[in-house]
Image (tube, rainbow, N blue to C red; front, side, top):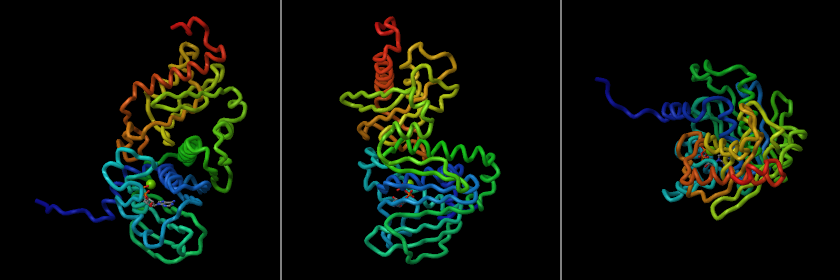
Length: 338
Ligand code: ADP
Ligand code: MG
């Protein structure tokens, strides 16, 4: 029988890359989340050829001290949690310490970073192997350049869709990140063309208008509600503005866009019988709640979460949507008495 042996770091990083990095959009998500976690007020995303040629992210966040840069690329190395208790009250978007080593294992990556106190540094890794590390001229913040994504994982490359589809996945992710963090000035460029730019003035209405267009924003109303557990803010469309797909519904919990069928459905439920079959609202609902009531450690991409009070939150969202719509007399009295 073959001998049992522990896999090399490069190989195990490649394996975990398979879970975290499915496509170019996953790289964009992980890197922008890192920039947000670093407290950046400005993040610029530049993409070439749907990310297959290059993904470049520049932020003005905390940066990394020179003696920590190499460590950031080690698996399970993170500055975001320290102990088991922290794992049950996650405040940051990342915490698993997997993104950088995963991306580095399957691409050519260069990071330039400065914490504003020490000299800046630069690190270049190719397919998980350190090529070069040294000092660099850079202002406080971090720039990451990812080239040749999936160059050593041809299977992954084979399964990618057309440039147009990969680009639409990237725009979708960046749009959701912008909606989740209106306090960050976020820009997205593809092949030199600007696709999104937000002001960073913490104005969700402005961000929605930038993404879905002003005419749509004009047909949306604000939703605000709060109880002892949840604080909800957001915007939802009047019943006259609907779409044929659910993908214009975004639920954000503590700054994280989450994919959750029941929560999305609770928004639809808030419309009662106001929506035609097969039509869905445009809705961005952001909830703040105690992080210890959410388990975000369900899946490596952290888009799925487990909620302790999932029913309660669903009801709260439905009621809040319903209340906002009925305040505008958009829901007939008969329904009010239900
Ligand atoms: P995680 O985000 O789960 O901690 P990552 O592999 O994505 O793991 O990043 C490892 C560490 O590198 C982070 O914990 C953080 O300390 C540092 N880091 C990564 N990107 C940035 C950035 N843009 N600015 C500052 N620090 C960063
Ligand atoms: Mg991360």
